Image: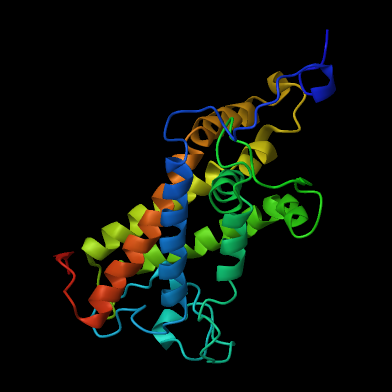
Length: 268
């Protein structure tokens, strides 16, 4: 059988970049717009150093963009784990967690596909030739660092625990009483989505069942692997949903903190 990849064996040479007639360019264009807008918003908010904590009200909401808040410039009530970072304008208040969360997303298998196609055009879509003449894959720096995704997953899971703690303590008012409002619902919904996205990660699926040769000998891990595999099928949707939930949660807390509107209280 002759090769279908070697031009010398008679494979048809097509000068056009693609023969597709559908709008193949629309998904990468939407990815550029969506990811670009989110990065701009998140960058502005991370360096704003304001409107991240509802300090003037009896209830307390801390945006996930500033958690954990380690800077000496943070409100003491918002610094649940201490203050030891200097208050410099170019240093985010959550400078310890944000880089690892960014690296977790950057090395995510789905996001790789999204921004490789959208920003690098490598390739922009199936059956569409990429403009690059040379392809080295992820075998050289900096893309070689994509192999560290599993370790960024561990750190992201720890940060999700911190976000969970923030959502729980938000039910305790400053006077010690219990209360909750719309902000609590938004915080909890965001945390649930973050956990679903983290659990749906390909690394999580591999950690749970990737090294098992006999599922029958590990029934519990096999069951967990099956559940994670179901989530893994929704990884793309969860990747985008959590970007939206993070932005919505942050914007809501910013609006309440800035006094643009009040938090509708259900209890307390």
